[in-house]
Image (cartoon, rainbow over all chains, first blue to last red; front, top):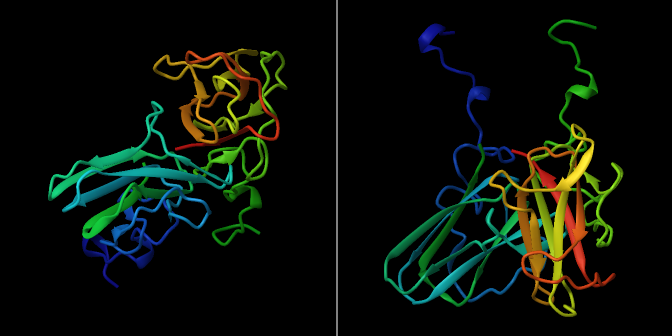
Length: 144
Length: 150
């Protein structure tokens, strides 16, 4: 077995992103790297059940990115689910401002945000109107 | 039994029921889904008032004014530090008062405040943020609180 600087670390020494949250590197909440939250679809309204949306694995930061290719005037609003409350509520930032992302019809416009979510259990993305298949929305979570 | 194969005592394992430091918000009122007691306009006076935060960092509060009698519902958050032995209205690290209101009927309002380990918190029904609060409507209005830490 090799030792010293050329030693091959054991598999257990590598960070495994299949763990329950607390990843420095943003972890896609929809699945494997590149998985999309939304890839076209109709307006989806407010969430109602615990199974709506995506688990954050109780991480601290939400990274999300939206590329808007076609239709004008779309807004995505983030909701938060708490197991502690058994309720959904619109997510707000530290100042109490709703966490939303709006693109006003600029074709090919890309927007991204990083929001603090303080460990809320699940997040849901409410779309105010239908978006085309060419509009991907990605989301991931990280913790420090 | 000792040595490298020693079995640690149970107290060495992290448990979600431990004293705070939970990433997942932990309900202050009890088990998940437990509402706080209906808030009143009384100010806190004894250490037994309010709820233990388990010295966590962030306070999450959910407020719902189900029917909205008039202006809406206002909530002021008080903090108790064992170090002081006294209650006072809480402010965050920027000096902003920890206050919130629900002014739209049947619409939930969420706030997350940094409380930096304050020992206990108390929720007072109060005139805040430019509204004169309505009375609490038991069975209709809702208030939940939870704490998390990073």
